[in-house]
Each structure stands twice: as C-alpha cells, then as structure tokens.
Image 1 (cartoon, rainbow, N blue to C red):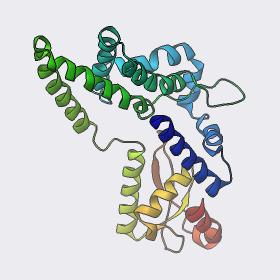
Image 2 (cartoon, helix red, strand yellow; image 1 turned 180 degrees about the horizontal axis):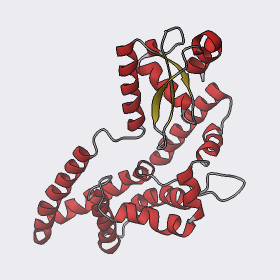
Image 3 (cartoon, one colour; image 1 turned 45 degrees about the vertical axis):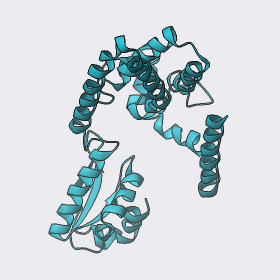
Image 4 (tube, rainbow, N blue to C red; image 1 turned 90 degrees about the horizontal axis):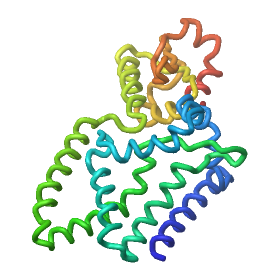
Length: 262
C-alpha cells in the first residue's frame, strides 16, 4: 500500500501540474505524438519483433556502458531468489519491477493504434530499485552462509569497479548533452565576435531557445550588426550560420520574436 500510495501521489502531482500549466491532463500522452514522428521511433515500429523481444533483453542482460554489470547482477539475483527464496517479499519486489517493465516493453503510446514506446536506458532504469533491493537481500543471505561468503566478497568489488569505470567513460554524455555542448560553442563564438542569435529553427527550436535563455539570454536578439541563425545539422544537433547583412533591417521584428518566443 505504501508503494501504491507513493506512486499515486507522484501521478496526482504530475497531472495537477499538467492541468495548471496546459489545461490538459493527458499532456504527456499528447506530447508523445511529436515523439512518435522521430526516425528512430518509426524504425523501431517497423521492426517490432526485434523491438519487443530483443531490445530490452539485450540492454538488460548484456554488460554495457549504461548499466555496467549491475543489471546482470540484478538478473542473476532474481534467478537465485526464485529458486531459494520464494517468499511474499520476493514476489512483491519482482511484481514491482515486472509491471512497469511489461508496460515499457509491450505498451503503446497511441490510443488509436499500437505504437511501441521508444527504448532507452533512462526509461528502463525505473524498474531497478526493487531489483537492487532484492539483490541486497540475496547478497546479505549469502554472506550469512559461510560457504557462500566468498562469492559476494569477490563479486561486489568487481561490479562496483566496472560501474565506476562506465560512469567515468560516459561522463558528459547525458540526455541532450551534445545539444548543450554545441549551443555553448555557438554562444562563445557569438560573444567573441559581438554577434546575436536572431533566428532559431528546426524541430527542437523551442528546446534550444529554452537552453539559450539559461546559458546566455544576452546573445538572443536581432539588434547587432552581425546576426546568427541556429539550425540543425545532418545529425540533428544545433549549428550556427550567418544571416544576410540586410536581415536585421528587413525582418528584425519577426525574427526577434522567432528567437525569443519560438
């Protein structure tokens, strides 16, 4: 009941926030319409067998830089628990993990047709808290049994070391971090040369505008002699390009609004 109550509280807070800001309780669901147009999402739904039966198993069962050996250890602990600790506690923790995992893997983001959710380490990380609790229980039980004590003593430092190495190797590569890196470079160039960012275009223009308002609101405008535009490159990342010299005279009001409000 405590877990269900906590989940309900988070859901209620999120729905309330959506209603206050957008007057749309199902804002996240409606926002998925835009996400479903992404090439990677379309590709995943064109290859559903792989998406539904291989994507998450490969991500969770094969060592990788996202989860190191932690996910493999948690999976092994689940097997041990099912064999040696068939208690209500084990059933509860596994059910806690299984419900969101089943939705993430087999759920749909559209009410009109089946459209599989995108695969991402940050999505599936939702299921790991109960699995790690279960892993801790199994490890503690093994330590109490003298014959098995050596296994966790050797295994845990290895798992921790690989996790630290993965964290070090992937530092600065978080969600949209490459967008931020590019925007920082654009801001640096604009400040050094006295330029302003007058136009922001592309599918993620609103997100980039929000980032720029945090990073450097002073470089957004259309009043400088030299003006820059920001647009996506072939990889979808923001890059700058010079605007025509007469751009400010002809279009300043329109593009001032584009840079600051789009």
